[in-house]
Image 1 (cartoon, protein in one colour):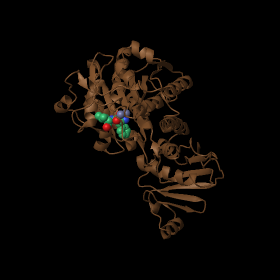
Image 2 (tube, rainbow, N blue to C red):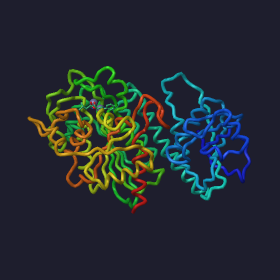
Image 3 (cartoon, protein in one colour):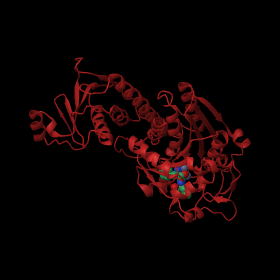
Image 4 (cartoon, helix red, strand yellow):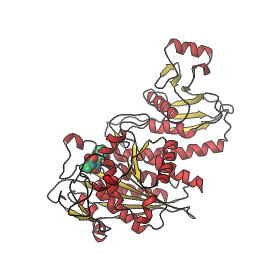
Amino acid sequence: MKIELINTQEIKKEFELELIIVNKMKQLNGKDKNELEILGFSSKENQSIFLNNRLFIGCNKLKDEDLKIAISNAIRIIKKTKYKTIFFSLICNAKELDISKIVEGLVLGGYSFNKYKKSTKNEQTNFFIDIKGTIQTKAFLEKELKNSLTISKSVNLVRDIINTTPEDYYPKTMAKTAKKIAKNNGLECRVYGENYLKKSKMNAMLAVGRASPHKSQLIHLIYKPSNAKGKIVLVGKGLTYDSGGLSLKSGAGMVSMKCDKSGGSAVLGVMNSLKDLACEYEVHGIVGAVENMIGADAFKPDDVLVARNGVSIEVRNTDAEGRLVLADCLCYAQDKIKKIDYIFDLATLTGACIVGLGEYTTGVMGHSEKLKKKLNKASQKSGELVGFLPYNRYLTQMINSQIADISNSASSRMGGAITASLFLDHFIKKENKNKWLHLDIAGAAYREKSWGYNTYGATGAGVRLMLEFIKLESLKK
Ligand code: BES
Ligand code: ZN
Ligand code: ZN
């Protein structure tokens, strides 16, 4: 898909199709209004109609999520037609165009994953967005276009990674992607195998990958601008497949567990955007890429594992593996990176989070109310939904163990998203307690249906949220 800005006041051009987003019927000319009303069209969301070579799409509000969803509805309809050059104008008197919302609607809504389908001819669609009448300069709008294309393309890259099967995408593949991203963006890239993990006492992470023929990989990407404003660390759960291990998932529960690499993939997606966005922060992306399988060598319920920071963990459920991988990765990150400003971990960590917040919302947990407020702002700006889940002293006790420092599985399933986060808290250094947030993206990252501008499968959750957070921080100082 190609997206260009044009000013119809200056240039006349031929188009095959005109896309018209309708927010209020009265904004249409009388003839169109009458005709559309006779045909039953209204300006509500999900309304669409072709009138000759014009496509009318209903839209509740000409901003934010409403605009993105309306545009994603449009692109999905257009993709089924033969139209290839599309002229796009908003029907309103808006003096400002929100290019990023339009681009996200087009690029994210127009995404489809066809890797495993018979080859389909993929002709390029060209979109021309009319900037006539806006008070913004062309240069400003071009920059907005470039930045939002960078972000949306990274989201789609992440979706491609997650949607790829565990047969084709395993820890070493993830490391390969990281290297490619590093090369394209001038990042430093360190990839460590199991010998390093052994040497570094990352036994919790190592145990999870033990029964897999695919060797675990620790990935560390670094983006370092000159005169960085601060340091942000992102740690991602990269379970390229989660069978549950010996605490095996049910048949149905295993379907879609290729999505368990979503946190790590989102971290890669963020790292893929920073250079093009001219990010002013030093950003570290750390991914624990592991496959959780069964076999004679599998780690077991009853095992006690000692993590990198010396905390011993009683394994009571091998399906609570993400927290074991993250435990070591969080320790690694804080040992290697000093003077951290913010540290986030992203993980498809618990089914309980989906039960608690619903399918679309990322669960956010941590100690600092101030930091949660900041993240909430990024959520509102980016459109990625978040909900905050509170700690308390009683839940804290639920991961106590009789034989080790802590247990990897709480004594009750209730509040499972929170107890998982309280487990991770044991691996956050004192000085970083208020700099850390845990993001459980189990619901938001992958759905076997389409919702809003998300298509079936991976959504790329976390990428826009984190990039928006970094952007807001950059504006602040
Ligand atoms: N990867 C799963 C969590 C998950 C569930 C992600 C559904 C996406 C969709 C995780 O490793 C897991 O299995 N968690 C267990 C934890 C339990 C054993 C304490 C869960 O949620 O049941
Ligand atoms: Zn699991
Ligand atoms: Zn998992």
